[in-house]
Length: 212
Image 1: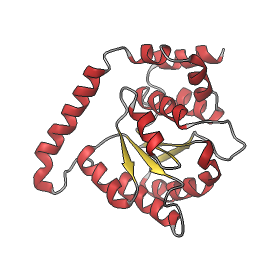
Image 2: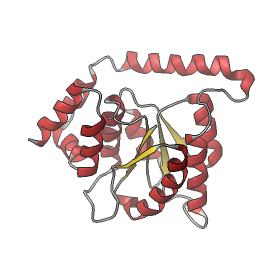
Image 3: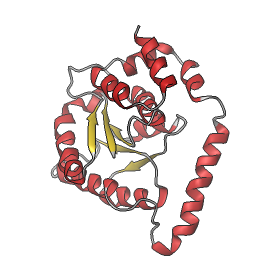
């Protein structure tokens, strides 16, 4: 599985800590991690609004399979990611959140709080959240006897979101301020992840057109 880590300006200084914990969990499982957000306070400046655009491009192009994002409270990232077609983001504050999201909702992104509650032992909490988010068979239900309705409801949610966002995915991006999108895609690590792994030439071409 390919996993992208997206961090924005307010918590960029914590990127090395979060990335280390993610790699500690992901590498033994054979997952590939792409650190495509800010990796320090002096890096390419991003807000949680940019994270939603980046996550949607990576997921809709199938450049990655899962996105981990966040901000101070995690709420801004949650709302930003869920604005976009093809992104199903949950909120994660502790390992049980990650486990239940994995089993019940089976989405493709998580938003974490990297300031609120990020105190003593925070790196352990992050590591355990990653363990629950990236291990096990997804969509198994919890408790297991609730699997059938939970799987059905997750599918219905996808259908409802698709119906509410009938516009073509690229058209949704083209309808917003293009300077926002251009800022979101300017980072070199993001571009490498997208261009080397994208399975959607239309999305790739659109991003390249913004950079020309």
